[in-house]
Image 1: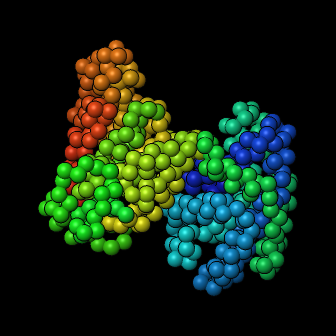
Image 2: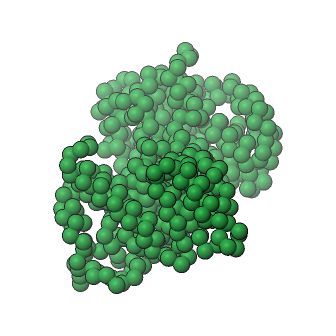
Image 3: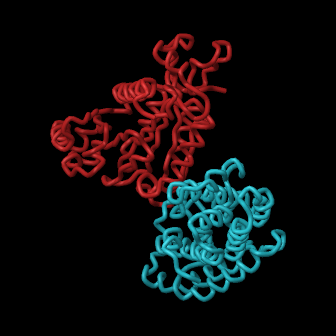
Amino acid sequence: MSLSYSSLVLADGRFPAGGYAHSGGLEAAVGAGRVRDLASLHEFLLGRLCTVGLTEAALSAATAVRLEQDPPTAVAWDDLGAEAHARIASPRLRETSRRLGRQLVRTARATWPSQLLDSLDPAMKDGPHLSIAHGCVGHVAGLDAFAIAVTSTYGTVAGPATAAVRLLGLDPAAVSGLIATLATDAEEVAATAVEAGGGPLDELPCPAATLVEIESERHEQWEVRLFAS
Amino acid sequence: MSSGRCDSLPPELHTHHHGHDHDHDHREPSVSTDRLSAAATGGVTGRGGRRPLRIGIGGPVGSGKTALIAALCATLGRELSLAVVTNDIFTTEDADFLRRRGVLPDERIMAVETGCCPHTAIRDDISANLDAVERLEARNAPVDVTLVESGGDNLTATFSRALVDHQIFVLDVAGGDKVPRKGGPGVTTADLLVINKTDLAPLVGADLEVMDRDARARRGSLPIVFTCLAREPGAARVAEWVRERSAAWSVEGLQGLVP
């Protein structure tokens, strides 16, 4: 993998695409008492990486691989959208995924102006799922499929990790260290995602974090919450 | 059913569910509003063929931002097509409050959750708010004015100019009469400073003259309005300011002064 400046722009937590308002299911897990400290956060992040992280990265990579091979008009957006949709069971997380996808495309349009990003709205009603949006944005930013998959896995880990600092008062430096220790795992997941992304759409990985999906529905009913999801 | 703009409804369809006093005549909208409305085109543009005017309302927790929005909707809802985006810190309480008050139909109100960073949502990363604003405006087109309420924050919160065209900053007297002197970007640069809860001044030992003098020193010629929304729920002077901004926005659009 060659490091590109653009991949850092896309992966930066300060990239203004709305991610800061979401905890990736961590707030619900903290509420349920399953994440309490650095050790349980480590388990949560590893679990997330190997489930949602792989699923999302593979969808992003599949999008990128198709954009590399075809002119954008030839990409089967409906099929891609359906595969992404089918891999999120919770209606609330589906909505969240689309919202974050719209927000990513919105910001990326100004960051990396391109016909592809302008064409996504008509192509995907209510906006593309985040994974597909990430694949498209990574593509117009000049990232290859692996860089797209790695930035996706980084987001999978870094979002909830940052939320944990706010929710549990953990040492920010220790959490940073935790994110760093997941480097090998995240790169392995990304490599698996790229390999799968080059194959048939309906054979993309689909491991799900079932408890996160169930708890996200309950989380929506909380009277007071810090994060939108 | 109800509508944010009564003048768009035939009299026989008009039902009184929009929560304002009914001393006005629904069949006779102000002439200027009606004439300008005719210039509106489809899509998400409002009067003057321009996108809707967007006004941000910020200020500390409990200063009266939501109450001010309820007042503006009640006072202006019959002459302007309004939409409201609320930003709560923890919940959707502000949006729920507005819905309960019935000042606007449900479909004209949308809540954005800010991940406990209200200032981020209106300044550093406005993507969620822009998404909400544009969907709301498209769903209710033509909208004249969209109000964006920030989550209650501190004195440093300001809106990005990419999110709103004007901003109102709301303080309350109970926060102490030193607040205007302390300044901060909201107090200093907001297009309108509203100092609410004047009725509490004697109870909390606040001197309104001191607040007025300090605010003027901070703000130069920028306007300041003292309100007591509990006793004057129509917020007439703030509503007048919004009315003027909306009219100016439309005229600029009609004159082709701006894209």
